[in-house]
Image (tube, helix red, strand yellow):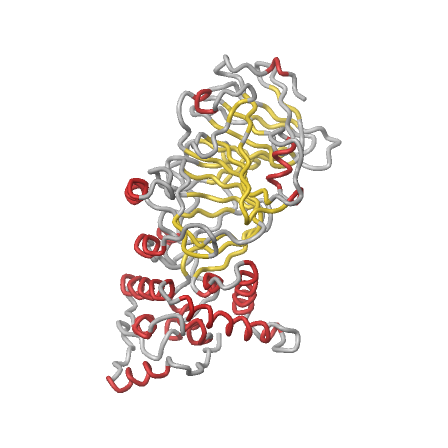
Length: 482
């Protein structure tokens, strides 16, 4: 243990050890396989790890649903002198979280006022994630051209959507607003599908996909990778949430694999569902979630359908930007003022001095071990899971790693955004389809035989439209070759 005399809650300059809050949810990783469990054990939050408990989240912040304290019981809010504008987490996902979005400030106030039991505060909740392990997530809607192909490819999915909504997808204009209108109608139709219909179609879909993904069926190299990934994701989600039509979400949302060190940002009113892996997560200080599937918890489909932006394409994926003139300090900066994250790496035989900040910050050791020093001579325990408060304007802390160590010391630090003029993360709504155009590149003419609004569009006769309408019922479609 570190020498306790180096910690004084009376000092406004001392770096202080914290006791984070552990959350266990059904989707967490069980036992010592969970990074959350290992961190909690190392930092003394728990005395032992239960192999059957799904350790899901570690909270560092001042939110009333899980307020962090100092070792002497003083709350973090008291130590800082007020609430932090952000909530910092470590998340360990063993199975998928719900299909969800977080409300903007205006809607959050309305939801909290009308339903305080399920919406516990009145704040918005934009969030960023930095992957600690390979991380799977569904983020943002697919491009409408992709969804159109999947409707053609999978009649079971098509059967869960009204004919009017399907026609809207195939006949919408090329204008962005026209596409959003069609996507909104399609999503609303799918989410409103009667349970008996969606359950029946899901069973048929799973039966077919199991055959198609078996070793006796098509050779993997003969099937486009995006189709194989989509099919296997559905099979996996259906095994975790039997009978839940939300298992078909990969037909609607981009299915992404994030490498360690990479990050993404989800703004308010953007749909997402984290699937598996471990991340650092930072968000505005809120716990508001509007859910619609893949969960036994309260579902609020009407609010989710009405609040989404229906932007298409995924968020930007960013591996960080060097900060403070040192490429060992990587910053992850969203376009919101409440928070940003820095990941600082100190390699064996090196030392590095943390930047002095004008705002309070918290940090957690995510990997390795090392020693520390500052002008007050503080010696902190730098082991994975240990978390600390760094008061505003406190003396700079220097990290050092012995040359004989086999790996680096790595910490993640969160604070109020100091680089609002240079964000390096954007949501799908900010990016559109300019920087990330979906899982596979499709020429627009593959969406349908006719492209209303385009110069080369051929006007369809009423008879042709009727024929297209009839073909939705049980017809087999040919998937365009990519």
